[in-house]
Amino acid sequence: MNKIAVIGSNMVDLITYVDRMPSQGETLEAPGFAMGCGGKGANQAVAAAKLGAGVLMVSKVGEDMFAANTLANFQRFGIDSRFVTQVPGVSSGVAPIFVQSDSHNSILIVKGANAHLKPADIDVAEAALRDCQLIVLQLEIDLATVYYAIAFAKRNGIPVLLNPAPAIAGLSREHLSQLDFFIPNEGELALITGRVVDGAETALIAARQLTAEGVRHVIVTLGEKGALYVGEEGEFHVPGHKVAARDTTGAGDAFIGCFAHYWTRNGDMRNAITQAVAYSACSVTGLGTQSSYPDATQFAQFLDHL
Ligand code: RIB
Image 1: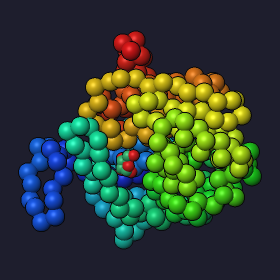
Image 2 (image 1 turned 60 degrees about the vertical axis):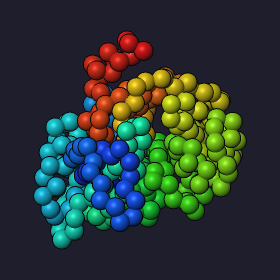
Image 3 (image 1 turned 180 degrees about the horizontal axis):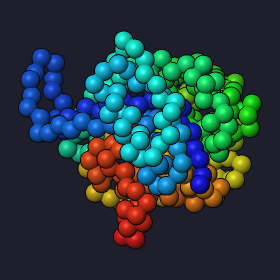
């Protein structure tokens, strides 16, 4: 079985469906609410696990009523959560999310326990991590831990993928240049390269800058327009799919989890990106984050009807 490690966040998603955002000082009734397991790291782990990958999660939960549910959720999907540990006296990560009727979302994150995931936690999981074919990272934990994980992966010859979400300006070029995979969306790519990115053409120029700096494979997610690849395997665009979108929350994470699964399973870059574009399109047709991710059977049905 292919094996992926995710070193990253988990959050409790508090999702309010709104007709519009309230203005300052206004109280507004909203049509719906849902609570679910989220966090970019956990979402990516669950997407890969739902598709059939073996997944190892390294993460932190707080000391509150959410912790047990998060751990149970990892176990429900067969994710190895031996290295998901509790931080006493702090809250778990939470994410109030607002989804508008046009399917677009606004997200606030409170890192809580996620801010306590430290380099020492990677050392504790070292033997299990060495067993994995890919280490997947995001930016909802301490940056020092992300940099340590990149160095750990390089030292141990394990391919490493960074999804720079949520975007942070001023990421260390030295660490970025060591990445095997860098998978931003257009906004993240613009912030990180300091260039205008407003479509496939400008994304191509910005992505080339990163490969020139040493990143082996840059994949830019373009929402409904698909994804762009620039790297050692050339340059190509995978077109998106027109679907009836209901909730776009977590679509980027669906892409990463699916890409990680297919790439570690067959090493075919174009195929992994093609599957990931379709998987994230499928995810926006459902509500919620992890709850909208299809398993392998549901995904096969979705592909049949494309
Ligand atoms: O990418 C979507 C995720 O961002 C949500 O699940 C939320 O928890 C935030 O981490």
